[in-house]
Length: 151
Image 1: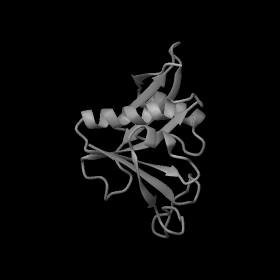
Image 2: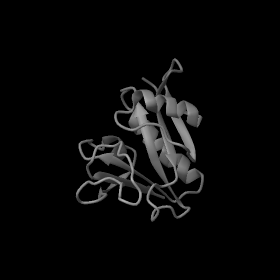
Image 3: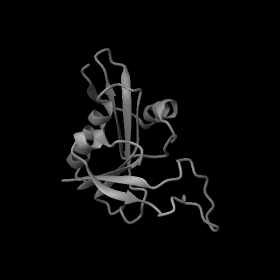
Image 4: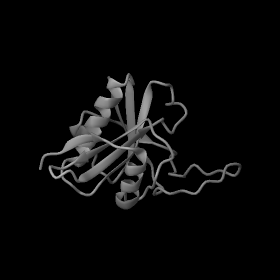
């Protein structure tokens, strides 16, 4: 199956994420969003790229792949990761990063030129919530794997 990368509005990407992502939902904003479509024009996956979540990474030269979801179409994750990387660098960003759960293989990141940096997050896997800023955890409570690509 041949996949084509196409532009995607945030509302469309969020709707796809809400329907297909396993554990995360919509995002409030983005720098850009992309989709992959099959020969019939059906969207098979989306990716949303925004500002980095961690303030130390938010240097103006870095973006983060904050959501990626597919309907299970083979090669869609790799096509999206590679396209996000190319677009970010074409827009002048110097680094793109993303995070995955430890039980995910990361094959789509490796196939599209990203590299594994290591474990990220608090050692106990605790979420962002604290006494002064209570948060509701939506992701599974575990440390994530950090992936990066730099130009």
